[in-house]
Length: 223
Ligand code: SAH
Image (cartoon, rainbow, N blue to C red; front, side, top):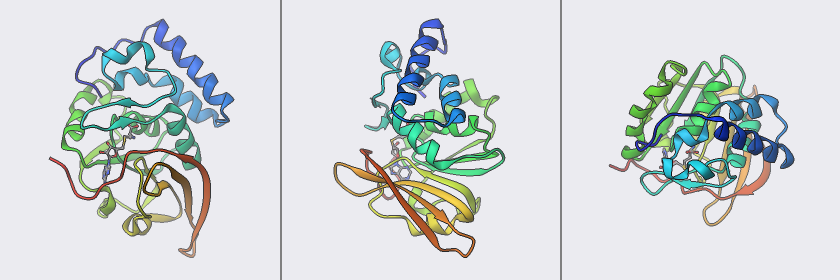
């Protein structure tokens, strides 16, 4: 969320958002639940008001602590792969702007646990008061996503929204049998989007999708 803004969603924002949904459809996003959630959540609320007129372009924008809000296409793509169902327990690594988090909550997750390692961004959850009544199912944590949240797991779904240098073993442990993890893996410019499905016998099925570019997943917390 951005500290520097009001929370008005006028007809221009709504119109720009509808156009963005069409762009996402043309680019191959077909999950109507994901498209509906993205049509409902005002992305501009999660950005500085300086970006209001361009908040619905398919691009990343800077947020605090030198981080970025993901491209809408990336958010849609990862969310579509995650296949969130009502009542599920979801873990997100990399809260950032809280935009992706809100989409997950809108899809009906019982709980969305979200971890951020940047103190400054974690503290922006205080600005989420605007949505707090609407999404009481979001739980914010300041910590290192490589560790996951062992006391709250296991999770039905895990989504990593930063470039992971490898698949974090603790996150695999915290995935339920039958669960899905969506994770961009590789250091450097581009990451392969992986979908890992934990089968009932505990083995992992791996599928590889398009390449994306994320900010790095780093270890430890940053004050
Ligand atoms: N879902 C966010 C993505 C923000 S960018 C959005 O669309 O706004 C990725 C975020 O992951 C950054 O905020 C970064 O600080 C955070 N991050 C990186 N490494 C992390 C880690 N080990 N644990 C938790 N968060 C991490």
